Image (cartoon, rainbow, N blue to C red; front, top):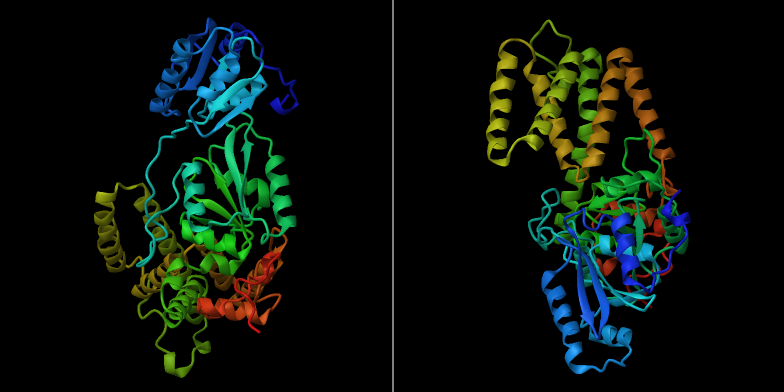
Length: 493
């Protein structure tokens, strides 16, 4: 039976009973990092419960010092609970009334003060989670722009967001997910902009998660919320940049923060959200539009270049006279389609190897693979040079895709098209491309059409996707998120 259905035991007035509960339930005295500090204040017992490594030790020492001084300045007849509460010199002190709350808060990094004779305890938020300082995310670098990014500490991440949106209507709803992990999950939105139905759906989904723990953090949350199944295309967007998250919040999106994860979930999103990058908005509208079109070209090449080239190789009659030179100039004993698949998987092997190779060695490994392996494979007749060329161009197109999840999904689509073209030639390319398009059209991310604003077509939204408009011209928020307030700027008369 889950703890949510268990009886909520009140905190006993005897501190000895509370200590016994902590020993039996939490492992006090067995786990070395779980501690208790016992004090005698006005001839009554006062106990501090804490977890080493999650608390700020200096705060604890200061609180203990303040409480010990009570013996020198207060009378024995004083209300000890009131006196202790007033002497806890901290901005975040909350009363708790059940042992379940006590355990959850202690394991979350707070200290809990239990006073003899009172069935109310005091929780003091002195959390100091281990982690790194904010730094620019490796996967979302920009030439110009902020260099701070989210880290594994949810408190620090919410602070980075508040620094950018100082609106009194910005909300961070804190929930706990995981029967055993009790991971902090925060739902972030602006109250008078975000669609209340979307907020309610996400809140309901988060509260309905029943699992022992979420060690994979945001990815586990995503799978419970969107129920993606075997669909390879991402239905939510991840970002580690605070400015990107803040921009989406101001548009009316809802952002989900998960403790222990440096990336946040942006919902809902469409296909085109995954091919936008912060760099476009750090340049002038003309330069930003050029970068966006270049990225679109790279994404299209990553999907269609290899299947189209294979089709021309298999059916040279389709080639116009001006580009009749396209195709392999050498013959090998290995079919072209097999060469493409082997080379494409070889590129994937290189990418995986680069991830698992220590940074000082990854550059040398890449040079060895690209120069030696590729050249030797051509020399021994395993590949024709054109295969290496087009696979490399398609691979570069994958790397231009800002979303790693989308680049992998596009690669799956590319390999599927290559196989269909090798079997059915021209009908395979046409049918495969049509099925891919229809598949994307039928995807709905949190009831949002995946190809909006292309389908269903919305001219204003479509122009926002094609052209990076200047901020003074971006008056309306995207209609697809159903914002309560559509205007980003006061409407012009």
